Image (tube, rainbow over all chains, first blue to last red; front, top):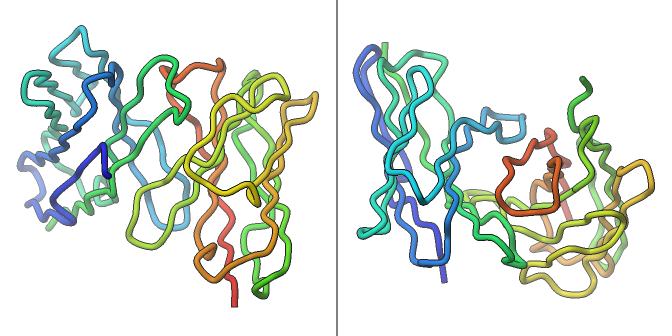
Length: 113
Length: 114
C-alpha cells in the first residue's frame, strides 16, 4: 500500500517555463513533507520542505504548496533550467512513526532546450 | 564539513552470501538511516539508528540488520542474500532522532546479487 504517490513517472518542460510536480498521500498522520532531487549516480539531495501547519513554502525558484484537505502537494519550479533535469522524490513523515520518512516513486523531469 | 560517505560504491555477491555495507555520517549528525532503492522505485526505509540503538524499522526481514558505532558511523548487514536484494542501498544522516529532519544522503552502494 503506497502512502506517498507520484502518479507521473516523467514530465517534460521547456526551459524557462514552469515545472509542476504533483504528489498525493493517503496517511492523514503525516505532518511534514519534503522534496528531494536525485541526479544519476548520486544520492537524493534535500530541496525544500513544508510543515502541515502551512500551505505554502518558497525558496528561490522552488515553491511547495500543500492542500491538506485533498492530501495533495505540489512542487513548482520557475523558471525551469537545464540543471533541473533530475528525478524528484516527494516524501512525508509523522512524529513518532517507526518507519520515518516515506518516499514516493519519483518523477523524472526533463527540461527541454 | 564532511558529507555522508558510503563504501563500497559497487558490489557483486552470489545468492546465499552475506554482505556488509558501511556508512560514515555527516559531521555533527547522530542519527543514521538506511534505505533500499530498487530500480524504478523510491527509497524504502529499512531502519534507523540513534545513539547506537535501533530507532524504528521498516518492513524488512530480520536478515537485514545494522549497527551504529560511538562515532555515529554505521553498518548494514544482509544475510542469506536473495536476487531481489539487488538494489541501491542509501545511507542518510540527520542531526536528531525524529522524523522531521531532512535527511542527508550518501551516494549509495549498488549491490548486485547473482
